[in-house]
Image: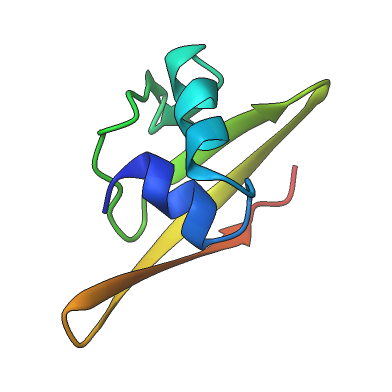
Length: 78
């Protein structure tokens, strides 16, 4: 699942275009690497997301439901 779709589907960010912009600006990391909007996210990947002054880490959960993929997350405790 693409990172911009994951961020929108998991409701971390409301719109895909905004999620894409966060990735372009380098505010989203997948396993400590800067994510492009088309970067793939798999279950178990650790995402570091910067929203304003707030930074938080989540563990990605990608599930297949029929032909579609669904994204969810679990926040890591700091």
